[in-house]
Amino acid sequence: MPPAPHLPLTGFYQFGYTTANLEHAQEELGRRYGLTRWRVRQPNPSMRTAHAYAGDSQLELIEPSADGEALYLDHMPGPGGIVRLHHLGYRIDDAAGWRQLEEAIAARGLATPKMGVAMGGDLHYAYIDTRAELGIWTEYVWRRGSAANLYDDVPRH
Image (cartoon, rainbow, N blue to C red; front, top):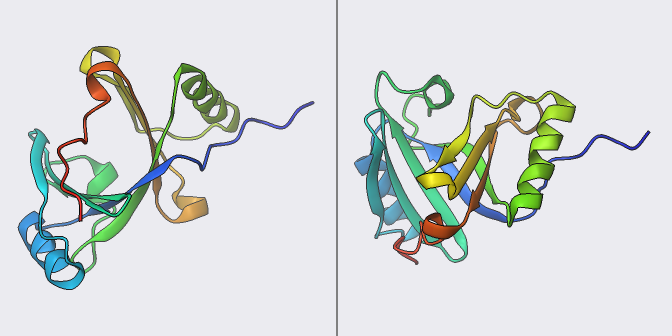
């Protein structure tokens, strides 16, 4: 019997962090690491985000509201902390790669509390609970069509 499909660790592009104060986190990361330009958005009523590139790596800051998703609220920085590493983000290139990811999730019985499709089917996303193995969540995205340029306006440093 062949081994169960594995989660891909190729296509890395993003460090995702949670924060209790988006503006403070942006200021401190600017002061400490030179990340002075951010794209700020409110993708839904329960969170705000800020994105910036440091070279080829994207940083995402997530500020959940008090009634936001447990996925974020349960993984916040400790007292005095600015940000906490929440997830690593990986890109999936095509439909075949997304099917392989879904097969690996199913075969391994992995929890995916946030998985879906948006932007008319052009954005597929999945948060996989890899905290037991990696200490953080793992996010996968497959972008095509209208979602292909989703991050083109994120400032680069």
